Structure formats: C-alpha cells, structure tokens
Image (cartoon, rainbow, N blue to C red; front, side):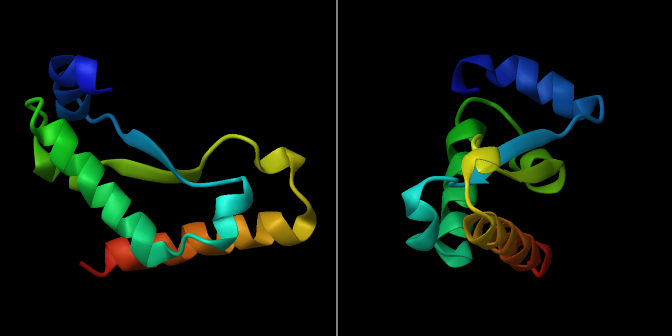
Length: 95
C-alpha cells in the first residue's frame, strides 16, 4: 500500500475502508496480544501518512481482520485469533 498513497487517499475520501489483516494466523497468534497489535496498527498509520494518506481517514475508515489462513487452524486456534481480533477492536474503539 505504501506505493499507492495517492490512490489510497482518494479511495478513502470516496468512503472506502482499508482492511488491516493484523491478527496473525500462525504460531505468533499466541505470542502477540491486542496491545502489541494496536501499536502495529498505529505504526501502519504513521507509515501510510508519510506517503500522503490522511491519518484521520486511516484511523476512522478501517476493518480489522485476521491475516489469511484461519481456515487451516484448529478450533482452539481460531477462537484465539477471533478473540484477539475482538480485543483489538475494543482497544481501538476506546481511543
């Protein structure tokens, strides 16, 4: 996305949302908590804003998702992935 700052800005200005596949679906899911992922989210906003994308739009128009691969996990691992996604949503919504 860093190479498409201008296009992303236009997309967001037209009402689009950026999907952030922040929650890992591999072994790190047990090691990375919602607080760590919140910092990754804000770092992503900082990096994209340096490319000319409005940080306000990025912080307002987003979707949180797991990264690809949830379908290959065990039920317990999937529950952890979605629990972490929900916790991250709660953290970001409380700001």
